[in-house]
Length: 252
Image (cartoon, rainbow, N blue to C red; front, side, top):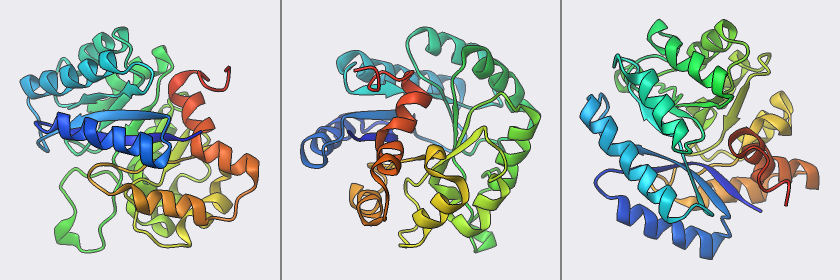
């Protein structure tokens, strides 16, 4: 069993994404994907509508294979309402990219909806060692930690191992409401074992960031890691199933 807990449709190339996901299903044995749709860094309300509509259409086409995250810009007054509407359509959580830091108070209404509906927030978290490359509102581990402390009932997924596991993971290690995925992370052989030692297998999700990043690095990291059978199942699918899908596959 394999759930890819971090993939992206990239508007306007949704059909290409669908083809890539079918390839992943056939070639790599991916059983289910968690998808959000992206386009510009600071989308307006019309763009958010377009992105989430396309995600919903794909969910309708392949309900056995696809679950959607609601892409949001917390700077919009209607962000919480958009999330509520999409959760009513069957979306399984929220996605925050780089429109604002995740610990900005603008995120609080979104956090409250997620707590009330018992769904997680996936947060793009990406440390860049060159200061000039860091986007103005790109969240780091410290931002995720601030949000997690402010809302201890809120389920958060810090994406990409923060892009610098040894720098970012210690900031959230003591916070049980924070999970991590290793999608699109730098492909160092020691990062997944480090995360496992720091967080344990119950807080790590497999993801690829596909199709922005090829499937091979994440799958290679998973296959190369020395894991017990239970740890491998936790990371490969069980954590994502429990967090996003309510234990759909675990009940089968």
